[in-house]
Amino acid sequence: MNTHNVVAKKKFGQNFLQDQEVLRKIVEAMPKNDNKIVEIGPGLGDLTKFLVDVKSVEAFEVDTDLCKLLQSKFEEEINTKRLHINCGDVLEAWQSELINEPYDLVANLPYYIATNIILKALADPMCKNILVMVQLEVAEKFCANEGEKVFGSLGVITQSVGNARIIVKVPPTAFDPQPKVDSAVFLIQKQRDRSDKDFEELLRVAFTQPRKTLMKNLSAKYEKQRLQEAFNDLELLSTIRPHQVSTKDYHQLYKKIKN
Ligand SMILES: C[S@@+](CC[C@H](N)C(=O)[O-])C[C@H]1O[C@@H](n2cnc3c(N)ncnc32)[C@H](O)[C@@H]1O
Image 1 (cartoon, helix red, strand yellow):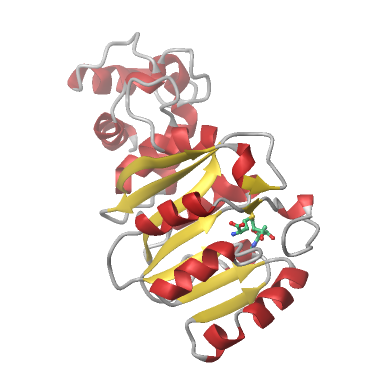
Image 2 (tube, protein in one colour):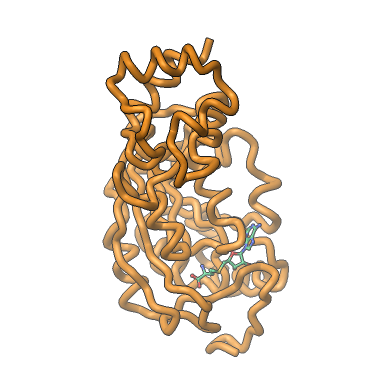
């Protein structure tokens, strides 16, 4: 039970962020621009309170009990149009664009759908920056660089549209109730739009068995002869592992073998 006397619902991934220092760091890390803020899962509104002070906010909250609480807590901000709350599942509301104007996603995400939400935001041309709290392990995958063990398809997809960095690591004690895992806030600054399902399919195949060679993984789907030529052109060794290949080389490889 937290300060609002609300019992957290596990099925909605509710871990409310109580640490004021972390909240302050999230707000400080927000990119300076005129974009609207989208907050997914405002919960009890602790982060929302900071966000509406800086910008207007479009919020999406699935829990109808919390929607009611937020509507009364933020009556003034709602009346003055600094805050709009959409009550329902954000994934159902999300077509290719979540809202029809440029926005930055700022949120302490529900962990059970965090990766899915970030991938949708990366592919959404209206989303310009992503500043979110997720499980530390997930943040590290999105922020990884070539050569690091955790560099995989999430790292390649992120680097294909911009750059990512961890802002702050957050222990379970910052939340109520406390999650079982460490968390981290990280920022993705998008520099270009790029979304290609066939490229993502190549990455899926490339990282099927991360410990095996890239050649072995890709051979399961692509023609060996063409792969060999592409590897030679790019001067990639046939013994190279998927995490050792740069994002640029993945795109080159894709160009050479897609037809
Ligand atoms: C980790 S809590 C964060 C709450 C609050 N922002 C904070 O920092 O304390 C995740 C929030 O996302 C909401 N949520 C879970 N699934 C959702 C969905 N599919 N669509 C919209 N909100 C969702 C939960 O109800 C909860 O309020």
